[in-house]
Length: 294
Image (cartoon, rainbow, N blue to C red):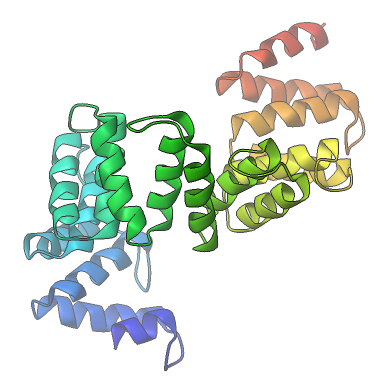
């Protein structure tokens, strides 16, 4: 009943009622109820956001063997949400989740092996776990597998396989996969170069909330790649991301103000955004500041 209220299927969506029913289920000892209650606390669904309580309920669910509870508990440990950061424990819970057959856990375990989180870096094992996740239909796992094929990490480089897995990820609705597929079309990786299709997939990715997709969309509008040149839209794309703290967009916004791209020239604004970009790690912004500053 909580799930019905939570997703609005069969009944009008009501997150507060969903929370009430998840609470009843969780306190009765039902592991899925405990997981869903933890999710409500983590995301602030039907109740105030409380990462400490999210941790407590994910832990109950995880200790009872729920795969999603285990992987979400691992994520809290990985990022230090509701509990002190502990990559070793994150890895432990991802492993339990992965072995249980949870595709999210398999993907997260692959991430740990790829980046050496809580364990020694091992790209071959990363490939193996991403593959398990991808073959089970996980969009993020499919995208990550495609990236390993693209760069030859843990497996021989294979652009045909790269394109294949990015396509599967994109079709599944994964925003990162849509962005990656756009990259393949623009650069002719594993397929014929097609900037129009590249633009279309970057657009889908941007709408789905992928930051890199939104940034790339701005670049396409700025230079007229796969679509008509539209500097005003380019500026708007950069502005939205820059205000959220995305360094590359802040640098681009500085350029827009410096040269009047999609907006009137304004050196004062250019300086502000170049400074933000530099503070966030864009070294090239310093050169711009040296030129503009009196």
